[in-house]
Image 1: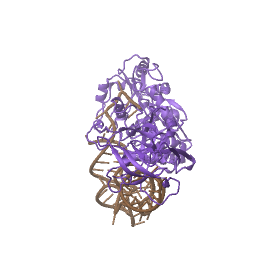
Image 2: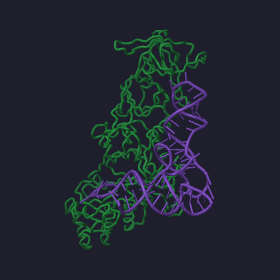
Image 3: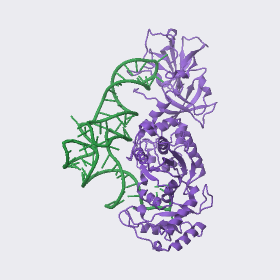
Length: 546
RNA sequence: AGGGCUAUAGCCAAGCGGUAAGGCAUCGGAUUUUGAUUCCGUGACUCGCAGGUUCGAAUCCUGCUAGCCCUGCCA
């Protein structure tokens, strides 16, 4: 588990605690409610919750809702659902917006100490004076305004005396700093916008760089973990903490965000895929969102174990999607019932089997987990097997069914192919085989060996089902600069076939291993008792090469 | 180019001056009523490059190279 995995943040926390810098470890997961969580967020969630837990500390869920233009309650609810589904229980649920009054007071205090001023300049003018990466900025005329006037103006900003963009509150730091974040950064902006939580109480809203350190300090957060792009903001974070009238002195630590092969991870790109109908929504099973992965069939444990095993570092990374798949297989190996489904059926007539007779055969539900017990499955004169399990003219080393070859039908008998029927288009419609009663499964028959074992579904009892097979959303190898050029057109394939009769009882989100196919999830949106729909989560590994 | 950061196998990633963990992937082999699982085996004469310090360097120092991030009243 995570205890075995060490990383630089854990070293820092361990050292801090050994030096008794803090009484307890407090972390937070601070999403902005402006979109859905994805697996990159899961990395942060696992890190924050499990790190604190390991040190017997606590973790808050805090919505960083300082920009009402982008945020919505819909996202608050979705995010809560996802975190709960992953299995984490925040110590407390907080909103940055609950601290608006405290933040306002902190801002006033900065003004009183000559550390902040109200800016008259327009957005464009501010930008011009900010300088560039290589040139220092210039000080604004507003910078020398008196404390009294700044106090008065800021109060008026709050009272709504100004229009959006007319004024802004800035920290007085250093316009010539090589770190652009320190060139008198904006602390408050005016936005006459209704907030999902505070309604129209406020028309001024704090900026992230001012609000975040205060939120952390107010909550007593000790280790504020964020991604690499905030590294340049750390001096500002520390500046705010140093000048705030708060006991707590949280420390910001940055780590590299997760990138996965064959997908995209930015909210902007994911939103574009949704808006432009490349997928069916944020919870489309092809999406790397938590809700998408959940609908696809990924388990919380598989996602968490993945997040633990990829590690935490500061190096840019691109993790192989197959690693995620590995942990799903590992999680479901002993948990999922193993059953048979024929995705692309071809009918087999057992010519020497008695007409109209159905026998029920015992079958273990999971041979690697005896506790799951047994089930009974039917067998009769007519069964379905997988179309790709028969070849009229097979290559060498093909040990499935072909004319004259004998194979084992899982849990049933050996069958041998004698003939096949084609339609006018040359498509094979029916196979004629004979079975050998001596070879019944469980009988101990071993006079002959066969190389192949095929799965099947008995025809008269077969339950029709739809199978949705997913492939990479994004083709990393594709040509083109725009990620939309890399969208895999064939990321969804739908097949119609059959499952065993006992599958009629399958409930939404039930997970199964379909023999020789892979792990499947009963689609929670579209599957019904009348029409079962299964999402393929991941296939089984295979060394089969034709 | 000013600042910040990173560089260990195909991909993640440990390592913290004493002679390169682990996982994924790959490829072999054994077992197998899933071409699955399981098991066993498989790769760094070397840690971006070049110098230096040291008995000893992936680890310390210097220089270089490459990549990522920063000029929102986004977070």
